Image 1 (spheres, rainbow, N blue to C red):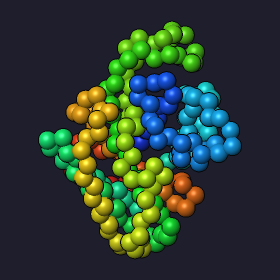
Image 2 (cartoon, rainbow, N blue to C red):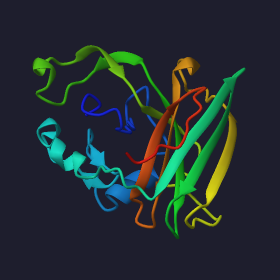
Image 3 (cartoon, rainbow, N blue to C red):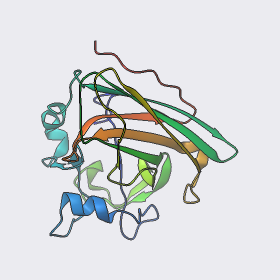
Image 4 (tube, rainbow, N blue to C red):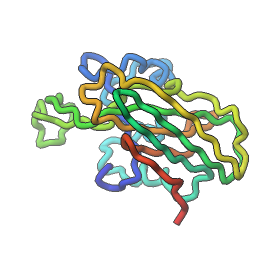
Amino acid sequence: MVEQSDKVVTIAIHNGNDPYHFAGFQPLKDMIMPNSDLELPQSRLNRTIVWTSPEPSNLAQAKALTGNNAGLGIAMSSTVVNGTVNLDVNMKFAQNYTGLKLVVYALENHLIRNQVNYTSYYGNVNPVQGYEHNHVLRKEITDLLGDPITESTTAGQTITKSFSFPIPANFLNPENISFVAMIVNADNLALNARAAEKNENQSFEQNP
């Protein structure tokens, strides 16, 4: 999917007997499948929608969730200095909203290890040697399901939320940190999401 669009925002959550295990997974699991086991690997679109397998043959399902008419924008700015992250998440609203939450995560990229192959991809090779794991969730900066946005979210408003935190000890290489921010509604569906690299200074994206 990353090859299909540079606008995809990807989050990979590892769970179980895995060196990249994310211990705080349970609230998200309860949101996705509250009354049954979540057998991994699983993929979700917009955090809750089952992406029909085989996913590479069902790209239209993912593309149907995209568009250029989001009623709000996200722009992030960050600095990483001496092991400390300072991150501003700017939000701008083009229409009126209520009941929104902001979700912000820190991810790690370029994690190399052999990967058990649960699929027929990669020529049925198992394990896949030297697999590169990207967009791996390492820390929730807000609550995993989001912090309520208590400020006015009416048309024309711009809000900035600022975060400062040390790079978590579970990062194997702090140089490979990146960020994702999304704004979700009361149903936990993302209205807009954006990814950012460290030390990036983003502007709001405009509809073409």
